[in-house]
Amino acid sequence: MMTDMSDARRTHRTDGQPEVGVARVSLINVPGSPIETRRQLMVKVSWMLLWMVYLAYPVNDLLHGGHDVLGQVLGWVSLAVFLVGYVLLVVYRSMTGMRPRECRAIVAMMVTLAISTSLTLGESFLTLFTYASVCVAVIVPVRYALGSVLGMAALTAATGLVGGAGSDTIATLTLTSFLSGAAMTGMQRLVATMKELREARAAVAHLAASEERLRLARDLHDLLGHSLSLITLKSELAGRFMDAGKDEAARAQVADIEQVARQSLIDVREAVTGFRRPTLPVELAAARTALAAAQIRLEAAPELVDTWPSLANEEAGALAWALREAVTNIVRHGEGAAVCTVRADESWEPSGERYAVLEITDDGRGPGKSQPGNGLSGLEERLALVGGRLETGPGARGRGFRLRASVPLRTVSAPAVNPL
Image (cartoon, rainbow, N blue to C red; front, side, top):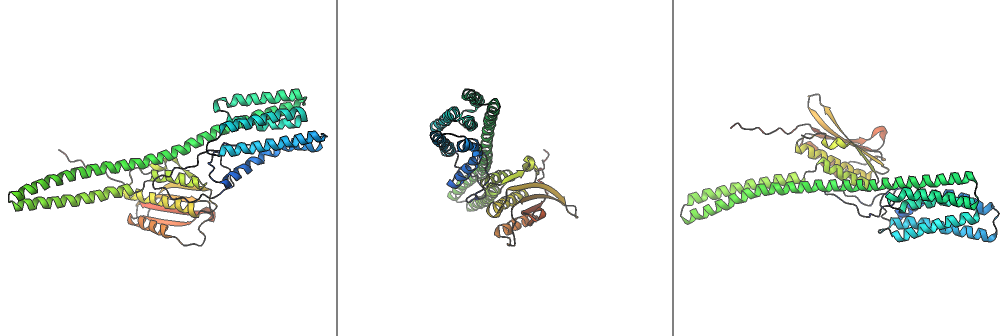
């Protein structure tokens, strides 16, 4: 009936994550998804109101139950207040800072209305206990939720007995109250787990980026520390030789300084190039966050990131670029897409050469008659530089878009050890 609504409005964006604009508005109700706009809140409330269909029993009783004017007025007012409290509870739990005091007051008011209307207007109003039980399960801490739901079921049975309801009605609504509250308790735990998983994914992506920064810092320290020390030493020697009139020796030291400086520049460029090269683990974590923001589910095997552990850096970087470009295209242009699938495979050429293959597909409307953009053209050039190739086209059965990147499966050989 009512799902927990996360109050987290900010999402973590990792380095290298495809830029995401405003996420497409969907009518699909995702449990635990953050509410960021009024339109999303209205969609959430609309889904919640669908469960109010069970109020047809008290409504029918008010219309055809033979109540006097005062009874009908009190009944309609009670139902209206009950419904307003239900909607307010949804709204408050969607806002930053859940307002627990207001939420508890609303639920207490709903329970009071359920008791009073059931005792004064008849057994049809025992249906309100089902909604009250769900609301209690939502606001009560998880460790107390099941006990609170049992208490609400007992209160339903007691109210029915005092109000003279039939035994079948009491049994049915007591069981319904308990099962609805218990189901909401399980949903609360599921939502909490989903939230923890989203935070864990963001943390993994952040740690991967931090680890890459640390690698760059270590490389620069090792490279520049040695080179700059050597330049300093040779500069001092060159100055001493010049003071002593040994011009040839000073020129030799200056030539060495130039050579060390040039090599240091090359080493720094290589280190920075390695830092800027994307990796599959980082891009896969960024893809999850980007696709989740666009309400698209990512299907990828957990072992995908370790499929080619010894693949050369250039080839691995090209595949990571392919994943980034494919996800960016899906987020920006994948209209109607709900699932993105990433698969790793290998293929053999007639020449005997083995290729690593990364395939990304979605189930959207596809590219239509549009021509490939600059992103795909640039990706094709990147793959060509490492001897790979790019294939694009419609997905299975002509639906969606498929991007298939292939690179030669050349592994990094271990450095040879010189015998002593």
